Each structure stands twice: as C-alpha cells, then as structure tokens.
Image (cartoon, rainbow, N blue to C red; front, top):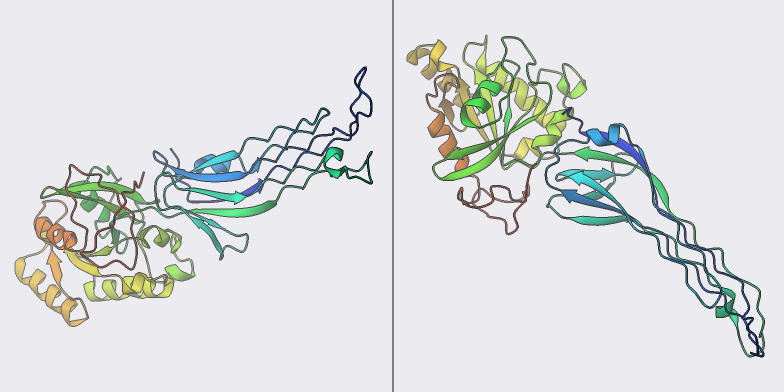
Length: 356
C-alpha cells in the first residue's frame, strides 16, 4: 500500500427538501384545507476515525464527497424523508485543516471519534404549516435550506510513543528492525527510508510504538533533501531518540544539524525530551566511543547511549531509558493510547488509542 499523508478534498452536505403545496381533496369531505408536508433534512458530512488505516491513499482517487438531499414534502401532511449522513472514514491521527492549511477544524486522536464537519440543510415548510385563522388556503412554501460546502486538507500525523531522528545513514532503519516488527528497508545509501515507518517494540513486559522518519540534512526546513514534511509524524511522540553515526566525520556536528532542524520546524519538537544514541559502536573501539560520547555531552547532550543496531549492544539500556518517559502499560493491555505533548514522562492517559 502506498503511503500518503496529505490530501485535499471537497465536501458538501445535503440540501433540505422543499415543502409541498397541497390541498386535501376527498369525496364527501367538505373544506379540505391545506395538507402540504415539510421537506426532509439533508445529510450531514461526518468524519470518523477507524482502525486499520495508516495512510490517506484512498483520497488520492476520490476528492469530491457530497451528501444526499432531503426528500420532498408531499400531500396528506407527509414529511419528506431525511437523507442519510455521509460518513467518511479516516485513519487515527488525521487532522482536518481549513483551506488555508493553518486552521485546525478537527483532530482525530482516538479510535471511533466522530465529528460532524458540515450539517445538512433543514427541510422547507409545506403550506399546511402556514394555515391560520385568517389564511385558510395558503399557497406559500419554503424550498429548503441549501447544504454547506468547503474544501479541506487532510493531514495524517502518525501516533507513536517514541520517534527516531538523525542524519541519513545514521542506522535508524537497522535500529527499528532490531527492536520491533517494522521490517524497514536497509541500504548503504542516503535516504533509504522515504516514508515514515511504525513498529511495535516489546521490552521487559511492556510495549510501545516507535516511529522512524526519513533522515534530515542541513537546510531541511527550507526543503533540502526530503525536507521536513515528515516531522509532523513525531509531533505527538513523548520522547525522541536521536541516532548519531559514530563512523561519521563529526558526531557533534551531526547532532547540531538535526537539533537545528528540529528547532527550525518548531511545533514543540525542540522542547521534547531526547535520548542521544551513538550508533554503530561495532565499527569503532571503546576508547573512540568514550571520547565521542564525552564530546556530545559537552555539546549539550544530557546522556549518551553507545549502541549498535547491528549487534544489539547497548540497546537494552536505551530502551530502559525510553520506558521512563512512557505510561506504565503491560503487553496484555492495548499498546496504543492517546498521546499529548503536555504529558510528563510518567503521566498515563485514560483512554486507549490505536496508531494503525
């Protein structure tokens, strides 16, 4: 399945049905009077978050969604049928933005969450409702209120507990494959990862969702490389894991570049707790790894975890640190839970959520 995290669609709710102009005509019944019924209500446009979806690819081929119109009113005081609501299914983690791409109209963070985005028009009044003591045979009626319409942007932000960041070839794909069931592509070239990946990590009787995004390079905020468009998928993470390649030219510079891009992107990423991991220590001796770790701490890292995604060295210690920022939930529970950027490391949410 292709990954698509942004889509623009057109929505229109159904118009109300017109009221009827009718008069009672029955044999042997005198003074029938008006009996035109009201029109039916138009269908609403409803968006609902469902499990099993992790891409907006369906909206690539269907961009126009229109609810049906309400039924016409009829004689014998019969009200027109109300139209069914138009229900649009979206993945959990989807945001609905106005056409300006800035105003958030809805944010789906929980499975089963429903939002009525556009309401259908009310049905028009039939002539029976205009009858008065002085107007015994009214012929006026209402045509029904028109439906609402708008263009909106859908933007998917994957829900994960922890996110991986780093330069291209920092070993993020190897790491997520080593600790989870992601099955990410691994290659000896830049930008092996082209779209975000999710994996479920099971560690010491607990589990959490880990997200891997394409590597960042200097100038990503201005569109260099793949740019920073995928950083939105880690906005909801509780903690970020910053992988640095020990075999790179300058690990300190590598940390500075990624930190600078996170700060340039904003959206609270610069304030999220980060765990710095010096990766690929199997390619260097212990003395060199210790020296680079000291330089990273001097440059601002709170703690450095020497690890190797290929051999597994140091990974358990890093995962132990990640668990300290996550709510205490065991593998027998639902591993998915609604996330909030404002929650602390030990604060648990009440309702479960599902990232896929």
